[in-house]
Image (cartoon, rainbow, N blue to C red; front, side, top):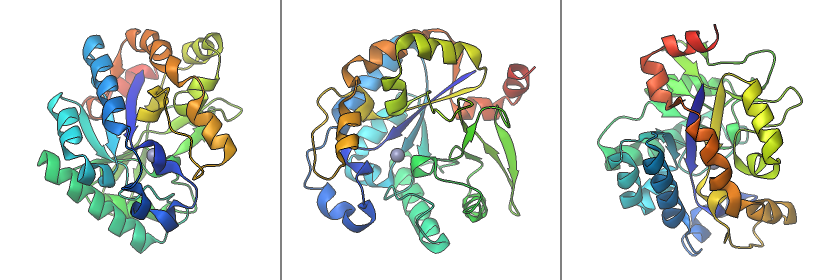
Length: 269
Ligand SMILES: [Zn+2]
């Protein structure tokens, strides 16, 4: 089972110490998100595939027409926080405020409640598991914020909270911790090795960003040298590398799997 997801954030949303700069400087930077997300939408249209789009509340506020385009093409709109803060670095009350602001901005665009969430950087862990109570009490029924090494768990699982159950769609890495199914790691690993990993695992959560397909990602002193290098690495080849994997259907959205839990059971049989 391939579950296809995109985190809709601009190239500058991952910069270091963003908790101090946030939107003060973002508005001044050249935006690349509309051009690159539209290229992703065209690719999906050609392949006749739907995906789950985790959208920043900040993006919904500043690029509402883009989010509307994603929605109108029949893709699933999910929340990726408002400010893109790492959830291990913020207090529960700030996490809740950020979540409420994000789902409100997404709801402004789609007119629908948001039910699926992903924390920036897959940053929900044991130490901030309080976040699941906050998610559940704000209407979230599925989450995709946990990163786990292959072996212990290899599929979606249930997290019990006081309010309701949340279905967790974890990012499963290789047994030695490589999150090969998306982002810079997918771009960095040679195609043969990527095929080997993909063929060896049943459940795979694919995660990409508009910057992954942008060969013209700007250089910025907001980033470390490593981040600047990673932002450029094989971005011109990413779509060509991804398309053959997506052609090996089935590819699902998170919502499709939630509707038909049999899919999970069948996949693990
Ligand atoms: Zn993100």
